[in-house]
Image (tube, rainbow, N blue to C red; front, side, top):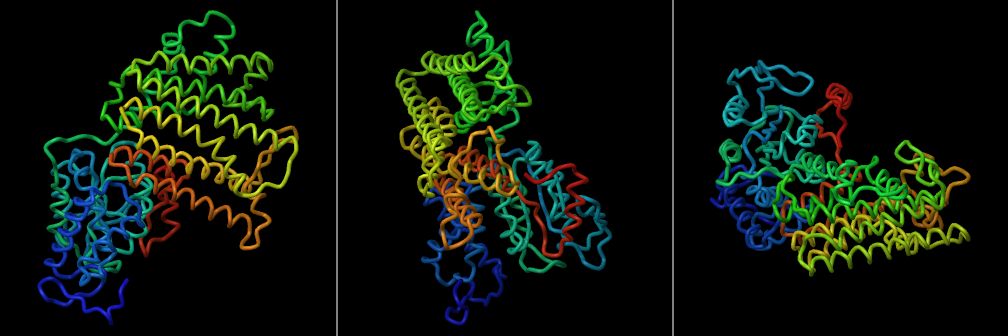
Length: 540
């Protein structure tokens, strides 16, 4: 932020300005047009991180330095420019208008607060009723609230796919990480003045945002529908239809394990990437993609059988592990069968030959890398030595990143993605895999979680950092986690598909539970806790 004593700040019409938002509409309109033009010229794709938005604002301000005081306001406008087209394509009845309670008349308001927010009585003493009427006539959902997890619960449920939000600049900065982690399409209109009562907003901007629409309406990726579709691939009947009926006990054991419990994250991600790139509906995914998705799950379920043996685990998904139920030798063989089935499915997938070859290369490279990482861990467990943080991180990358990498890249290949996209997904998967393992080590430390005496010891990042003198191991690990999470998100900057970028950003937010309750400057924290209980929903 530039010192106002060094730079004379004026509106485009010559008037003085004050505060974080230009007080004259002419200046606001000039900055909005500049942000729209800049985003279009640079082909910026949402979602963008706060750092990326501020860097973009700095780049734009180099051409209009007279507006340097409004850097954060300009970052909001660039954010809006990247999302406005997406919001316009979403049906009105899948949008939420979110207004702050501070817009109401602080003394004469006739509305009352319930557990969700303000119930407006339309007394006409403020602008809330006018905006609420305009939004509800179009079919919007409407909330006058801050600090409510109902926003994310509506988004997670699929009822709401975009948000038009009005707030002060300070609140927007607090809320932004929450919305960015969920990759929520939205347009933000900053209040003209800060404070927690009797605030004002540019009504023309809000009305325009409410009414924005495009000729081709398209819903955001329906991840709930996609999840149900992917789950349907793993019923016993679906597995028999795709792999063939189980002819003997070995196949029955393998098919039963494949059909058993699990989150199906790998095939879900493969399908999600394909859908984000092609725009296909969940019910219209091609057989080649389904073959590939089931193959990815075969690889994963095989790795779990082998992992349970290596770690001496007796249960998984609340049932005995395969080696506990059927014996060690049978379990090893069943896992090997699933690996073979995965490669068979890839080889038979109804895709062009060039795609089939690339999928086989991705799967075999991931398989090899995972085995090297797991092997390094097993060899270390037999003869534990002091490991450097760099070596632990490399083991993390080898044993965890392939789980993300293979699923994402196979989905992209099926969708016709090129080598550049494959490389981006590879970098993303590596950073995400490392962050995932660091997070796991931190969680184990904070919950005092240890394996049973017979369990397998693993390299641990906190142990590797314990020799450092700069800061305590827990703090050093936490800093490292944030560094790799940030690296994963930054990998997405070069993606041109907003749907794909949003899917992967939401994936990061989900894995690390990056959702927090939005709160206003005068919110009572205990009230937020009451809201959580009322809704029966925790953020994230």
